[in-house]
Image 1 (tube, rainbow, N blue to C red):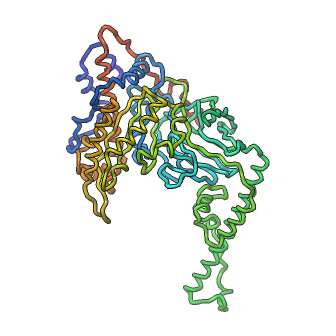
Image 2: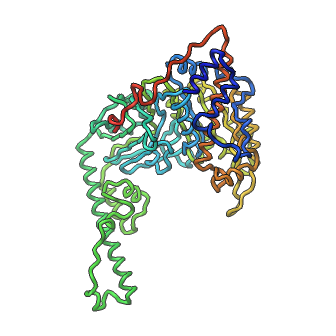
Image 3: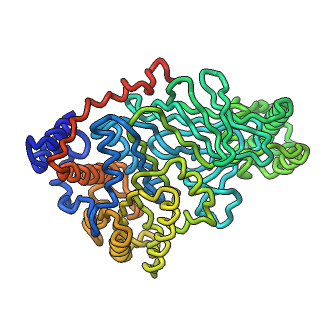
Length: 550
C-alpha cells in the first residue's frame, strides 16, 4: 500500500522520485536487507540499463499503466534460462513481489509442468506428483524422441493409470493462486486418449483445439490444485490393462520379497557357521518378510509411482527383469499421450509471470529443430516482457565463441518476435562463476566478463535493457565471496536459496525503478488518474477460499 500511494504521489507531483525511492527501502522483501554485511555487492549498479533508450518498453509500460491506474488488462512476463530458472527461486521471488506488492494482483500462474514425471526437479514454487510410468524428452538430451515446445520438455505415457497433480499453493503460507482456465498442450498418437480435469471427484472434459494441439478446460470455480487423468477411447480396455498391470506388479512384489527373504536367511546361516544341510536349520525360526519388504524401493502399495519408476529404470533384481519383459510382451500396443505444458490463468486483471528453464540449457536448445512447438505455444502467451537468463552454460567452456553466442541469441529473438513483435527484452548477464579443473580445484572463469560484453552488444542491437548481474554481484572472482557469505553453493556456479532470493529482490527493485522512471516522465498536461486500491489476493473474484480449495 505504501508503494501504491507513493506511485500516486509521484504521478501527481507531491514529492520526488528520489524521496519515493527512500520510502521503498522500509517496505518488506528486498528493502529490509542489511547490505553492510555484503559490502562486495555493488547496489549502485542495481538498475536496468538501456544502451539505446527504452522506447521498445513503451508497450510494456503502457500495459502496466492500464493495470495500475485502471485495474484492467493482463501483463505477461516470461523469464527463460537454465538451471537457475528451473529451480524457480530467483524467478519465484520476483513473481511473488509482482503479484503481492506493487503493482499487485495475479492473472494466473502461467506455464507449469509435472517435472516429477520427467524425474527432474520441480520448480520450488509448487509441487508436482504423478502416477504411472512416464518417459521424457528434454531439449538438452542428445536424442530427443518427442516434439518439444516453449518449456523445452515433454513427458508421455501409455499407462492406463497415469495421472498428474500440481499443487500451486503447496509452499505458500497463504493462498495465492485461483485458476479458472487451463490450456493443456499435448496430443495422443492416434487420437484415442484425452486428458480430463478432475475437480471435486468429477471429470471435466476439455475442448480440443487442433490448431494448437491443446485442450482448453474451464473450471467451474477457482482452484489451486490441478489434477489431470487420461481417458482412453476404449474405457473397457483401459480398465482391463490397468487391472492386469496391477496384478502383475503385485505378484512381482511378492516374488521379490520371497527372494529377498531367502537371501537374508542364507546370510544369517552363514554368519552362524551353518549350512542349509545342517540339522540345526530346522531349529531356526522361519523368516517371514516384514510388511514393507513386500514393496521394496519405496512402494507403499502396488500403484505407487516410485515402484513403477524403479522397475522402468531396471532397479529390480536381474531374475525379475525377464519376467517383467514377458509381461510387457503380452500386452498389446496401448494409447499414448504426450504432454508439453499447461498454461494456467484466470479472468482477473493482473500479472502472469512464467519461468522457463531446463538444467544445462543453452541458447541453441530452444531452436526450432529442437523445440518445433516453441512458437505455437508462445502464441497463446505472447509475453509483453522477456527476461533472458540463458548463457551460464554457453560460457562454461574453455574457449567461448562470443560471436556465435550473439548469433544464436539473434535466432532465438527472431522466433519470439515472429509471434509477439512488441515484446520488450531484458538481458540478464551471467553470474560470476568458477571452472572446475580437478577434484576440489576451481579457477576463476573469465568468460563471465566476455559474455557480459556480448549481452550489452545484444541490448544495443535489439534496443533492449540489461540487468548487469555480473557487475552487481562484484565482478570477476566475486562468487567466492558469495560462497563465503553463505549465499552460493560450493560448485561456485549456483546459489543457495538466500542468494537466489536476494538476487530476485534486487531485480524486482531494478525493474520497478525503471517503471517508476517511466511514470515520472509522463507529461504533466496528461494527468494520470490515481489507481484504485488493488483488491487483495483473497478478495479477487477468481481466488478460492480455504473451503473452496481442493
